[in-house]
Length: 370
Ligand SMILES: *Cc1c(COP(=O)(O)O)cnc(C)c1O
Image (cartoon, rainbow, N blue to C red; front, side):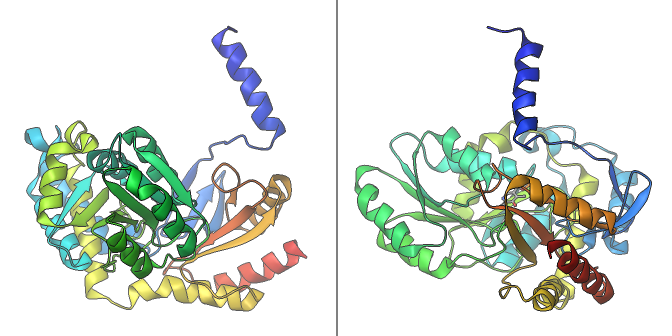
């Protein structure tokens, strides 16, 4: 066995050669879309703050007030002494927006899956999921010990084939998908998946991390994050009262992790109230994505996420660098986040972008892609 650092340096060299090294930048958002990096200001098309709520005056004020009243940390896990009253207030709001009986907030979206999936299925059970499902679903599925079968992306015939082939061999079955796919921006046929879940006696779990808090009503288990459109941090699951009670006693990432800071909860609650009170706000990111795709003649969009698939890693990185030189931050997404050979630029649009920003971006993309 090589010494630790020898092993690490060898591995890092291999990553570097494949253009797969990941590096941190220091980024400081001065508002929802303008970000400072290395002393220069950029317009970001690389944030999931779809509604610009991270800098919304009401959302910030609610956080500041709670920070002064309640201090910085949650103090303990929710089951010990960390269950601030703001949790229940926020969970009632979430359940109302998603049209379910109840909701449960976790540390973040990743921790939500890590808790929920192994609480529901384990050895001897089956998980059937879309092949493009987020890493947090895959990791949770592996942790659960259940057998995992992937179906081709959004292919209902293949999903049914997996269920026909494997369902009978296992006891419980979870059918899982993202509602809006994080790297492709397309949406899942949730109604059809719900019909398959009924037909083959499976429980449907939807990951609505990139949704805008609409009701994904067909799913028994509606998961989502508070780190994206809500502009804060945290994860949640909505469902029946029985589901929520069960998860409180069985989801290990809920039981064994500290509660969110009360100020974060106050800001989340304020953000959800803004979304509820302004129905047009949640429509704006999609309109911005539509404008961008029309300007470039790209296929019709289904969400605020627009991928431009380039293929290989190096040209994708180069394209992102060119856009950065023009003042735009756009991430180059590479394997293993997406399948090999489908490296891409991923544009995400916010309600806070201006029309002129989008027009200028489209021009620069046309230029650098030509
Ligand atoms: C971001 C994301 C998550 C994880 O949520 P966090 O709150 O960031 O941990 C889960 N699923 C999908 C599809 C995501 O894009």
